[in-house]
Image (cartoon, rainbow, N blue to C red):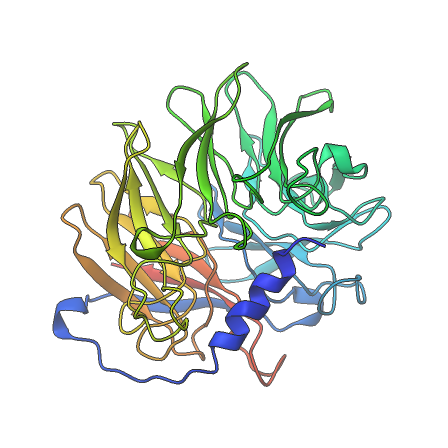
Length: 411
């Protein structure tokens, strides 16, 4: 089995480290934080790992990894996960509750793709005919269709990232395992394409040092696809790659650990000058006290040729640690993101990093208002930020961890 579910376990072990520090004045920034929705577990879903997408009317759409109407689905907690909608008043509607193999998916991990007609597209890590994942769509009425069920190892297994549409049609994604790569047990992952007729094609098979692509692909300005692999630790510490139309993949950067970061897991964002921005979940400041010498992660910039610049190394407290999610970049070039740990209470943060490299903590989670955010952020025209936390919020559903929240940060 690939390592997707075990990522949560790694972070759970780290949350046992207490910490209460006051934020220095230089890091404080006036924001209005509000919880839009607290998941209750059961039928309304629980533990949203993915970020959100937002439509033109202000509705938010996302997935929960667990919960729903089905029972235990084979690998993790109760329920197979859900697709949900949160309206502008904070009311939740369950659009689909997954039921698992053999006819439906289970455990969606990453953000949805919102089509022009309101159809939502996504992946599940498990479920389907072989319990190795699916590609699905949900129309505006809530009707779900399985577009592809992963099965044979050579076609990829366990899709962890979401989907992207390329100009001219076609849906593109990754699987964390499977494929023809032999340096990993069960395959090192793939990039795949689904065309409008439902034809499935493997475009790329990964192998050392590029192993385990877990993030949603990014569409570059020139139509190329960009992504990252997280590596497996013993062999490889992660890469950033580019995949052009009709040509072999190019490795833009290979992470070497230490101060320059390692284990990129979140999605990438590309600026107008073709520079790429992302995060790593490890490396950076090796004195960070939360990870026993592995580092608390970095924010980095890559030149078009692959030269890496570390923009910020996380120190744990007060600025956060272990950013699993990718970044949001606004028109001014400011970067926004989340960390899963660290901050004033060690439950994670929402941060921004300006063009001069100045870090500002916009919010430090305190558990009751959310904890352990793996979420990408989405921003509306007014500058409000929206995201999710995996834990925290309503502790009636789980007295130890809570079931997660949808939050809003207003400037």
